[in-house]
Each structure stands twice: as structure tokens, then as C-alpha cells.
Length: 129
Image (cartoon, rainbow, N blue to C red; front, side, top):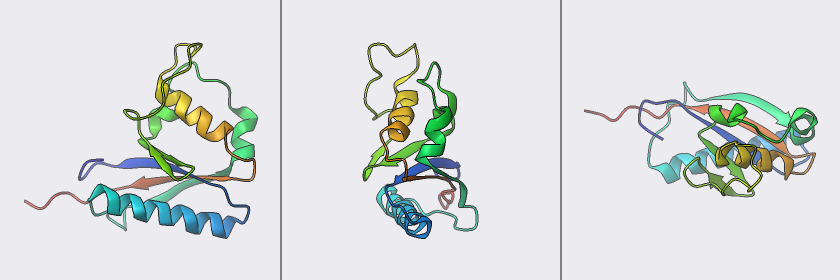
């Protein structure tokens, strides 16, 4: 994450109630802000999308390229943050897809059907000169 550069994160929350899932997702985004040491522009930070894991699983195939993962900078699943440089290695039969695409795939496919996947666009404020 860099000052002044948009960052997109997906937070997977294992909650059945949408309001509770959204609240927990927001808490993970706030924790992310605290941990990264940058201040987010709250006016430019927005919820981009919400989907049930079951709905995403319906059309998700094992990756053959970067696909959706190319648009994500971080994934929070099971209380753990992943990034392209710190995610598990791709499986031996990876179809040539990068490890990050497999991290996205496993994050969704490994989640309970009732889990909510939220995608957030975050904008860290530029560093003061």
C-alpha cells in the first residue's frame, strides 16, 4: 500500500447476517488502516461490492491466468491478510496461473457458502511534504 495510490482489498467474513458481516468487514478495513500506518481518505474509501461466497463459487473455475485477482491488492480471509508477495505457492498443477490467482480462488472456494465477500477501494492520503 502506498500513499496516494488506490488499494483494493477483499474481506471474507463468515457471518450469516448481512449487517453483521458488513460491520465485521468494516472492522477489518479499520484494522488494516491501523496496521499499515497510513491514513485513509474516508471520502475516497468505498465499498465496491458484496457477494455471498456461494454466488461467487457458482461461476468460479480453477484459474488459468490472474483474472479477478489482478484487481485485488490484499485479501483478508480467516482473520489473515494475504498479498501477492506473501500468499501460498500455486499448486503443482496450477494451469500456469500465478499464486495470487490461486489465493483468490482458495479464499472463495474455501469459505462457507453463507460467508460474505466484500471488496473495498481504499485511498491512503498522500504523505505531507
